[in-house]
Amino acid sequence: MPGSASYAILLLGTLLEALVVVCAVRRKVLKKYFVLNLYMLLCVFVSLGRYHILTHDGGVKSITYRYFYFYSDALLTIILYFGLISLYVSVFEEMKVERYLRIGAIVLLAGTSWFSYAVVSQSSHRMLTYFAFELSQNLYFVGLVLTYVLWAAVLKMRHTQALLVQLVLSLGIYFSAYAASYSLSNLHPTFYSYVAYMVPVIGCLLPMSWAYAFWRVPDEARLSPQRLAMAGSR
Amino acid sequence: MIAAIILVCSLAFFLQFFVPYCRSVIASSTGHVLSLEVQDVTGISEQAAGDDFARVMQLLMLCPDRPEDRSEIRAIGLYYRILNAVKTTVARLAPSLMAWAEKERGRCTYFAAVALDRRVAFSRDLLAQQIEA
Image 1 (cartoon, one colour):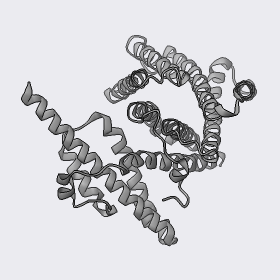
Image 2 (cartoon, helix red, strand yellow; image 1 turned 90 degrees about the horizontal axis):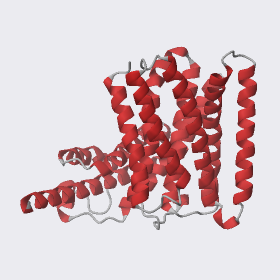
Image 3 (cartoon, chains in turn cyan, brown; image 1 turned 45 degrees about the vertical axis):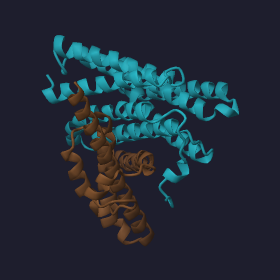
Image 4 (cartoon, chains in turn cyan, red; image 1 turned 90 degrees about the vertical axis):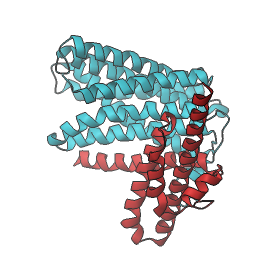
């Protein structure tokens, strides 16, 4: 069973995820950022499901929890991937390339799934579970690269919408923190125990920053992304 | 080896996103004019010195907590620590980076002073509401 600190982080994360949706509704941007809010809403249900399994079905070491954790994580990662694509659609809105972006996103997802399958099929008996884990992990890296490309596009196209800029940057922080934690756990087995504590905290970063963005940054607020970029900035 | 490369790349990506994110949070406070009380207490009117950050943060911690600014204060606190690390290490080799780090530390301090101002106003409103009730 996880300690009270783990329960507290799970509760905090769930409250923040719900807060994101509440803030989006309050700011009337739910429709505009529908996939992002759908992701947060699903996160709330998944967190409740995890809590139920933790308290009723044998805790964190139970098979039920492990299956639920990896399958739900894969599902959430796919939804978040489409959330990222919806941000691409917002950034490239004026270029009318929505259809091509969606096709490209599906092709990339199919490619990542095929790659994950190819990796897992060589080395595993419990293929479906490992496939879910591998897909989730690979999608985090794909998401990180796509977010970096999106940030570069925001800078290049001089997109000034403050809310969108903050959503993109928050996503970048989240993906890169996860990627760092995954690679740290792969670096040496001793790091795994530290990573196990880091992951739930990292999980709180995205809802925290999105809740802040929906709460405090008005939809019409503008800022210059070039001035935010590190090199030579004032 | 590959894991180490991915780790370094991820940390570089993290900084690439984290620094602009913090700057975007700080940017929201740059237009704020500090109240006279906060100017008196902190000694900051327009420009703030990076070294005053810890002192302003101590004053900030004396005020009642506002849940809505907690996460941004933490993020800027982490950003300030990263800037300190940059200032004491790599910035010694590059004067332009030193100047940039110093300027950013000053902006962090100004952000903390704005947060203090907002907390003071929040406490005042809270007190007024309690008196009315």
